[in-house]
Image 1 (cartoon, rainbow, N blue to C red):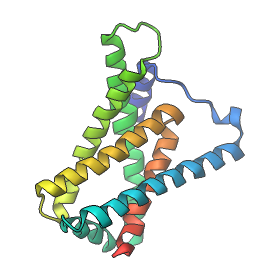
Image 2: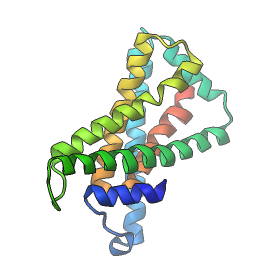
Image 3: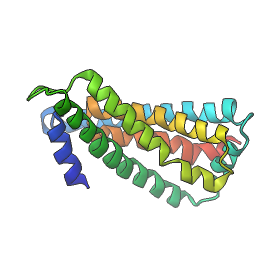
Image 4: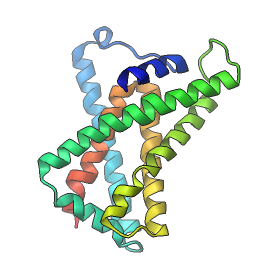
Length: 194
């Protein structure tokens, strides 16, 4: 899947990323920490919205967060890793790149980089698909009503759009790190907030 994603990314004509050798490893490590912290901040904002805004009117939100707390830490860390790497490869590297490449070709942009509007449309579509695949895991922990479904889709789409922006502007590795940071807030800190 990674190979396919890299081929689609190249085909999409999205901007290329500066190689780590050109920037130096200390800077790469600092940037990695920065993007993971960015994701953690995003995750904390989402967690606050879940707990303080949505949960009072949709109490089943709390059941999913509590369910995460019943898993051993090693399993939650594994979930964070799998989600950050796997979902970013599928939804950003493959889907966002494919939609961007198709949009650029439909608009007959030739060899030029895709227009910003094409990239944003692709990002929103990929984010909505990303949000939709999160519905089944939430429905396992709580009955899926309209309020819960709308909340899950809205908040995951927000995360997906943000990770897509990071992917387009900084690359897939930093999108994975931001995603991991956000998932740390939900999976590790979320269960402690009750």
